Image (cartoon, rainbow, N blue to C red; front, top):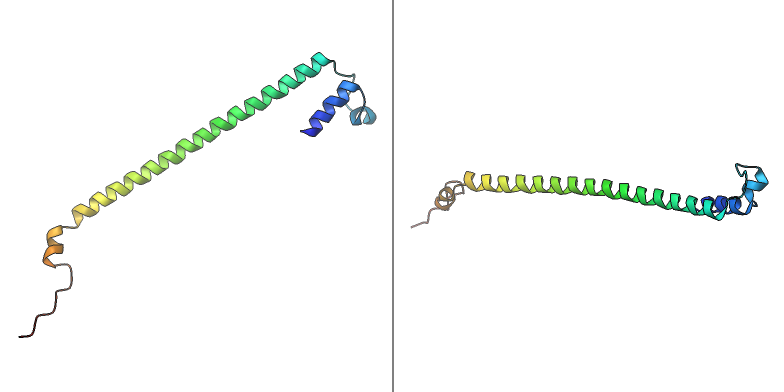
Amino acid sequence: MSAVLDKARARLTGKGKEAAEGGDNKQPMSMDQLGEWYMQQALDFEKSKTEESRASKKVAWRVATGAMVLAGVAIIAAGANMFLTSPTRLACGATTASPAKSRS
């Protein structure tokens, strides 16, 4: 960012690194030109921030959708587990080890 500002200052004053090196500094910038350049830089910055925001929003929606799908699968699995595990079999002890017979 400072390199861009240094370039603008050099073009404004006609001095600086670009003028010394014989760069693309044809003539100093007027205040109007500098203002237009600054506004263009600000608009480009805002445009890039808006694009970043849209991309971030898209990623957030994808993550939220994935989380909802995962939650739905977990709910379906829990429901299936309830239906597949019969409470009567557990109450009778059919699936568990039977207790030892008492000695009389």
